[in-house]
Image 1 (cartoon, helix red, strand yellow):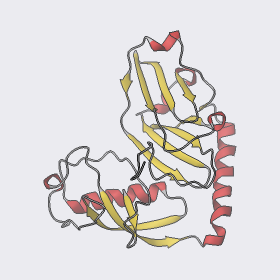
Image 2: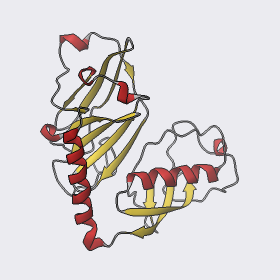
Image 3: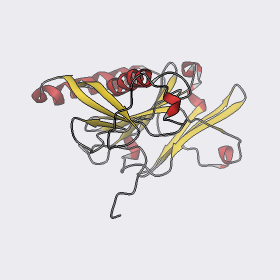
Length: 230
């Protein structure tokens, strides 16, 4: 989770494949900074400290990571804005980037949309669950997930099937080298427009693009979470 400035409110949450069994806190700080900036379109962040909670008690940078964190622990980081595109130009830049991406998608054969998979042909298969992914909020219209899959660009288009509803989605890879794989979210942070969601095949990952039903809504999390008072 990363928190901007002196606020105690979580600005966004990313899931990164981290090795918490080795290295020191300073190594973790550098990896977190790379992950946060990779997911940010217009703003560059500098990570100031690593903590075990939203209270942001700083951990010494030279101490071993495994003294504080286990494999699936949450990591809280305090960040400051390092540099940014002027606010008045942000929407224009984002629109240009989206237009470029859409144009690029229209030229590729690796776009997967509209496939149905809840049927007798896949329900009885044995699947391996894909559990390495990177989630990020990508502006007013999209939330995106990069699902790690080595050599994804070798996949046959017809082997990748997906289904989206307003509240969930599932992605399946069928009969790739004799194995089946899947990744899905049963209860999304907020509602999506199923008709405009899509899956793109990249070099070493599958990019799941979730079109927000309510444009401008910020997704702090991928999964729906209960808040205090709910």
